Length: 142
Image 1 (cartoon, rainbow, N blue to C red):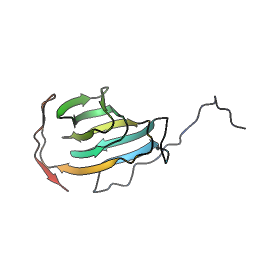
Image 2 (image 1 turned 45 degrees about the vertical axis):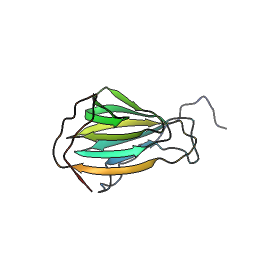
Image 3 (image 1 turned 90 degrees about the horizontal axis):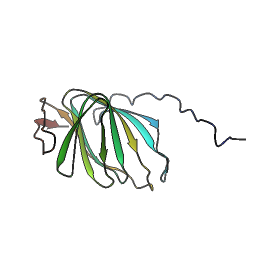
Image 4 (image 1 turned 135 degrees about the horizontal axis):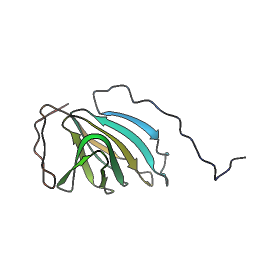
């Protein structure tokens, strides 16, 4: 018999094998198929890379290390270790780090609609966009 009040341990998972089509990531608590009421947690590492996507659910990015830039709705914010950036449901978000960022992404809840992956880039030059406005970066799309 399962005790509904007992803690639940999620075993450590490894990062996806280094891939050429996206930043390193690992599912800590994967999303349930068909929707979920509890958060899904992922750890991401960006190394001079950018990622663009659209989620049907809220997304919170807690920066563990480095510096993360997020652009959504025509506004760019810079976040450092300890900061959290929220991208609202339905918004397109672009996330990038000119050098390195490690973050915990918290997703949900979700009714099960899929997220849309819109792009991945390896950044060819380090760019420091100005927070609060649009960003110009020199990049190579892969």
